[in-house]
Image (cartoon, rainbow, N blue to C red; front, side, top):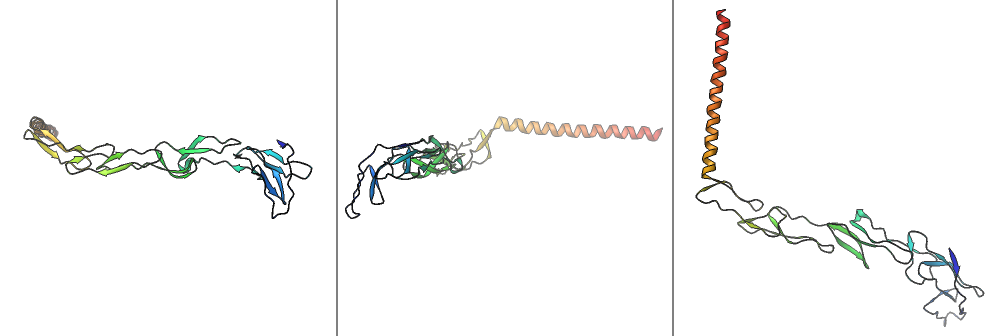
Amino acid sequence: SCHHLLPSRISSLPPSVLSCHPAEYEIKDECCPKCQPGTHVKKDCTEFMSTSCQTCSNGTFMSQITGLKYCLPCTNCDTGSGVKVKRSCTKTLDAICEPLEGFYCIDTKEDSCVAAEKHSECKPGQYIITKGTASKDTLCSDCSHGTFSDGTLTSCRPQTKCDAENHLIKPGTAAADAECVGNGSLTAAMISVFLLLILGVALFFFLYRKKYLSDRNVSLS
């Protein structure tokens, strides 16, 4: 849609002394009224007609009075850049973008985030000092000696110490706890293995004897 601003005083002075009002713009040594937010100049004013303005088309905006013959393109909140729409674009306001969930902003333009990166993940053997926010990355630190973390903890945990009644079966690392097994459990495990061995030997002799007798009967017949 287009409309005409109400006629305004048109200044026609020598270039050296021409000074337009803030609500006007200079064109061909004359001062024309600017168009309102959400519109742009369609046709400059003349001595007999005021400025003709047109509403911004879809995907464009103008946030202030202007003497431009076009509106500005809306910011595209591209998920490929790690951002999403926080405020949609209107005729008078540009879109505002914010980081995706789990991302933090690395480049801003006024109130909008134009690019974001995924929060760093702490490695096994590290703990989280501070969790990532929309403006800051996750901060990690290494576990001290005798402690461990799988990378998801906010503090390292002390390694389990195997005592006299528990045997160490797997030493601890910065990424995993030590593994211990009690004497009772160890004894039970040894007995189970022993019984399995006996069962295996007995089964072998049973099958061998069965095959031997079968072969013998065949030869006798």
